[in-house]
Amino acid sequence: MINTDNLFAIETKTKAKSLRKLITFSIMVLLFLSFAYMVYWIGVMSDDMILDYSGYLFTPLAKLFFPFDDSLYIYRNTSVVLFCLVFPMIFMYYLVDKTESKVLKEYREYLEYQQKEKIKQEEKNRLREFDIIKKYSICLSLNYANSNIKDETKKHLNRTIFMKLRSILNSLNKNIKTSVDDVMIIVSNDFEEYDKIYMTLLRALSKVQNILKDKYKLNFIPSLTTDAYEYNDLIDASKIQKQHYEIQSFKMQNRALTSALFRKKYQHLKHNKFAGIPIGEYLMSDKNSNNSYELNVVFKDLAKTLASL
Image (cartoon, rainbow, N blue to C red):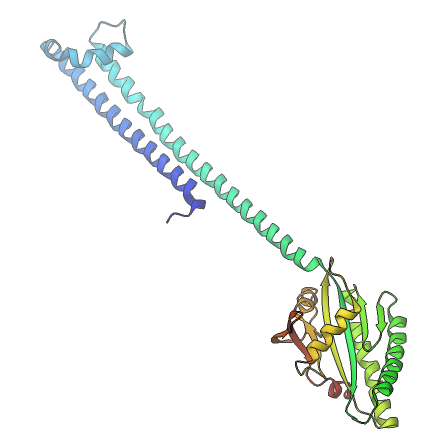
């Protein structure tokens, strides 16, 4: 099957080849006739009887070139004219070659231009895929290894911790938005500051972990999930919290995780520190909805990571 991109080139070469064949044939005919007329002229100059028997073959073409010449030299002159016609035919052969080369060169340049434009458009489309990812969220939940803590106490303790973390993060970056409830949610559109915000959060959690362990003998179980959102996505705190807990149901407590969409944008910006390693896609299915999560693990044992900071 012929590639349609090469069809024009094939047709051009085919036509040029046909023209060259025609020109070559014409040159051969002209040379043959020129030689024949020269021989004929020599013949009739030596014996005019030849003219009586064969003049009807040679005279019409000679008269076409020299209608008012009745001498025998008309045949010699016709031979010269026919030979001279070979040179413009040779020029035409050369012209066909040059025209073919020029047309094919321009066509190749056109294809190259089209390819470059295609690559540019593909690059624009690829960049647009990243550009529409405008915001990210970090969701933090805290649980405790001590089973004797009452839910009300745990809720109050978590809120105290979240408010402290909120104060630290707000002093670090005024452009982030935080909300505190059963979980702490951080929302920002500044992906370039993500590493700084995330590292500050980890260090603050590390300090909280040490205080709880040393003063209150409490071992908490932190869980972090980071997600990203396109420009037209509605960022709803209750939805973020719901998805965070759905992810925890996959036995993901005490882990720091990121979504595939966040990782895509994050790595596009040449960051990799907190991108995470892909661990697969998880499906949450119930009678009300079906949600799938393509996850990456940043820290497999978050509590252990915090203890090492």
